[in-house]
Image 1: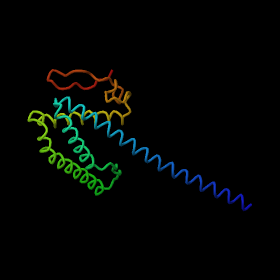
Image 2: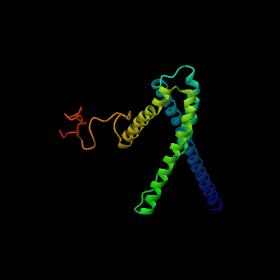
Image 3: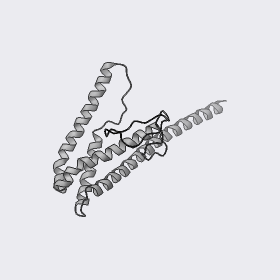
Image 4: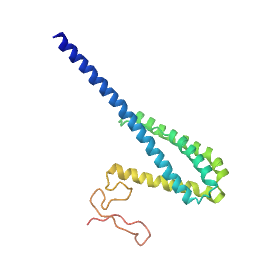
Length: 184
């Protein structure tokens, strides 16, 4: 009987140790996967920036090193934790203030690096840089929203129908305003 209890206790310990190890491995795997995705995203951003800014062969290595530093520092300003949902006005106000503080830090990083980019880029490229970055961010936001909504394809393209099952209309009306989706 004592042997049976001892065996059961050993098995329970072994199972719990195995579960803890597997949780640690899973967290490490997620972190590794996230780092790989960040690197792929950075490389994709750099590819677009190099093409759109029409960098010379001499500018590419300097810009790549500088932009990598800039992107890492910019990413570090944002808190990855999701805000908790709350009905408490004070909690919500604090969350908004926190996001504004993060945005201010991001702007400070951007200001800090403008002079550094000016050493690598010419005036035309420097003027174009924020616009290209904004285009890239817009595409990323669109892709994330598409992924969150569960649109088919996951390539950032709009699905054929909106959430209400309507097909989007193409083009603009006579005043130049984008047309709204219509019900079929």
